[in-house]
Image (cartoon, rainbow, N blue to C red; front, side, top):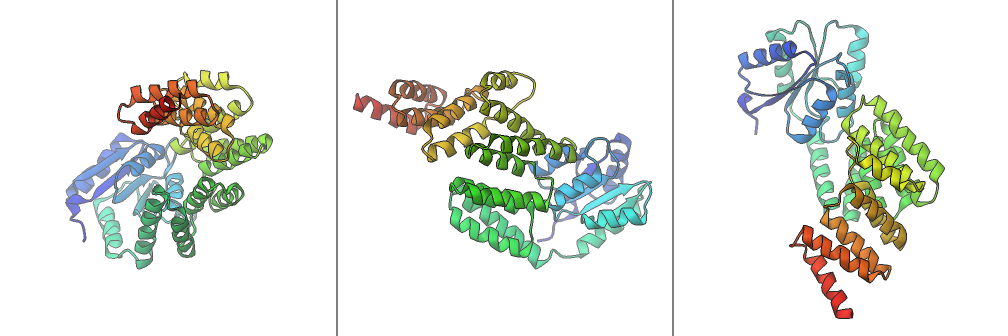
Length: 357
């Protein structure tokens, strides 16, 4: 069902407040009512990941992540590549048209932007129906993500393979690699993360995952090479949030694997916020591979990052039990229940400990 123009949401991206206001006023005059406004590409990307957007009007030249960089990032994102993207520039040249066209731009607007130009660009896009291929691709991706969340990995892999026959994107290879790690197939996962990078150098998380695999296999020098590549990708993406986060996680992970856990812990108290997810994920992988001491070490690092996560407490308690450290297991299960009284699995484990003693 086609949306009424009053229901369409525009994302206007420009470092100039006056230019954002100018485009907003034109759209208001054309009858549009919903707008999001950001000052650079990185902030725009976060908005796009957070809420549905129907059209993007973005300045080409901006400090930080510019318009073309944002367009490149969106062009390889399976959820965002199909959003109409109009890029604004002071001067149009043949090279600019080719460069933007390769990245999938929907139209170029020359400053000063005029009402009739925006109206014509929007009309051209809305008259072109979404192809059956794009609709099928989006449906398959939604289904594959659902199956992955439900841990139906084999079925999800079948769908991702179908998607690769339609369109190859780095995110598909990344998701396949993620599943392969969950299945313990580290060598296969490494290949898929590498494929993600070959499709697009913007995949900072793929380099990070490759580093994790090297660490699991004991190749610390190779891991550091991968994590150093995360820094290069960070620069490419002009400090985009995802790359920045991946770099911070990777640097802490490298320090931890070198036995510098105290340094890592100190970093956590700085103004750089680092999530505990990477440590918890490694703990799960080590535990599945019966490397219980390594699992415990990573769960403990995860708790240094986030001491109030009841699920990490539970994971650590379970690892303590498997390592026959019953007293420590009891203490951490009690801590988990204090954080979350509804965590029945922790209560069940405590009951099992009491029954056994």
